[in-house]
Length: 167
Length: 187
Image (cartoon, rainbow over all chains, first blue to last red; front, side):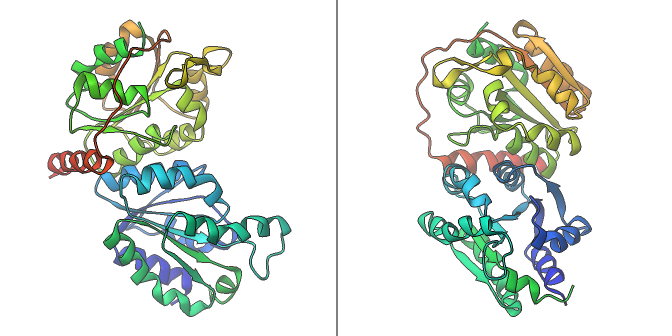
């Protein structure tokens, strides 16, 4: 099973029925599979804080939700994470492309990469870093952990992880 | 009419419906005038009333009204194309457009100057956009609820505030009692 298929299958297994996305080149494959998955309602959003609002609403409507975005979005969403997702105690798996790591061709991406883990740590958000392809084996357990604990959870997926995928 | 008077006038129409109340004074006024478990009070995150409401409307079948403000829509403009392209006929976005950032001291917004939120919503692809005066707000909402069509209402009113207490309810309590109403009505 490809990494993208495994991620989508784990979302479905964990009853995630509503996913919002802001695209990143590394995430193009998984976003396409989510768009084509009949068990998931996919709503593309224009900005990540907007997407978190959609997720909060869908969650209160009884659907488990998740967001897919780039790590630059951590800079955009700190207020929303603190005053909506955490303050109202909502679960929110965040599948994040970790741009600016080894293999990154765009220097500017490194500027947010160096802040990403520090910001997530400052927010006390459980954070997992997928570097090798088989790190995806933990995705099922991480989703379960997010809903068990009713917390936002960050899964950082770097270029080495995506390079190891078969489709 | 100022916002608190507009809200008072629409309470008979929306009281029983799932309502997302915008951050700051709109939430505080709704809480003071007509506290209901079917009201979700935003205590933070300016701009996301419309997004929370749309997500809720897409996820379940009950009607949802987002009470928003012109300043808040301006801060989350990306919401309008998302609403237009993800039609939920159980969703109404009600924008109190008083041309000012009411909760922060009535600083003027661009919506009170050259920018028409109704024109922007239409340009974004929203199909049922209604601009009304404050006196017609309750009628516009009744019509929208009866139409079973997703509707954006831009309600023009005067700026100005009354004194209202802050909401002391715990956010998890607000969320929990709201979700229990949502669940009961969808079961």
